Image (tube, rainbow, N blue to C red; front, top):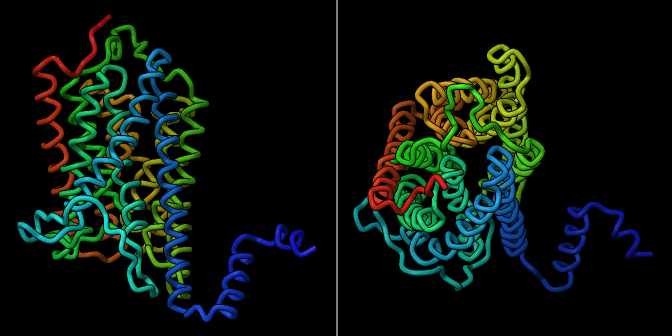
Length: 409
């Protein structure tokens, strides 16, 4: 009877009952309960963000040619597998270490501490902190996969993954989240519109420019390698949207108490509204542009809205979230058409979604959230420029040795 009743109750109620019982029987302190709640919810958030890798893989496979699907799945799986190792070895230490060049570069050693901290509200075990952060690092790396799909060799992509996960992402991440120079300026990027998404988007742009377009992408007859499976792409966007509830609400990092609860649910609602507004705005604008509702524009509009709200979801109102999503949807269309005009081949729209909307998210934090505009402008330029230049260098070196692009055959 008791088991049947427990199965019928929501998970949160069951966990609360268990916590109360444990507190009564074992004299667990309130601080220990808050510590357990914060760390376990962050574990769930980390899993959601890691599951976004499946969404990225499906979106990329769906938006590309069927012949490239196996290569795409391999790249997306191997960048996560290699990325977690590299980020454990060096990336985390660079991003959250002690300053070597104050404000710009840090180092905290290899690996992650296994020593549990003194439990208390808002205190994170270093192990779960690393798990959550590596999910973000993997996201930054895998965004690039979509921009270079259909023509990059696996070894070259693996080298790039190691480079961005070990150096590019952690160094600029330290500038904000590690307490570096951007953080000192008051730059606000709550969950990574710039730190994560713009890094991936602008690194992807660099890769697409160096590699050149896929054969037949800009054919004179207008055929142009259309997406082969919108079902996969749509399912991927659904997964990414759900995973974003780990990305944005999870970045609250502390969940016990009324204030943290109120902040987390505001973040979740703002995330939802921006995604929906971005999708509808892109659908309507795309309808005028191409004369019909375009699913590809609509899917990327939703993703653009999600990226745009990521920096500022904790400091804007619901109404502002709608506006941020609408503008992001419009920016996705404009940036996609720009790439078409200049003949840069970005098969999934990685730069329009993650690069352009990442910058918009940073600026929107000032426009709608009251963050200092000067700091937001500087951060919204510095991080993308850093990522673009560093990625361009590594892609150019690989390309100059004919070790990057597959042969026409």
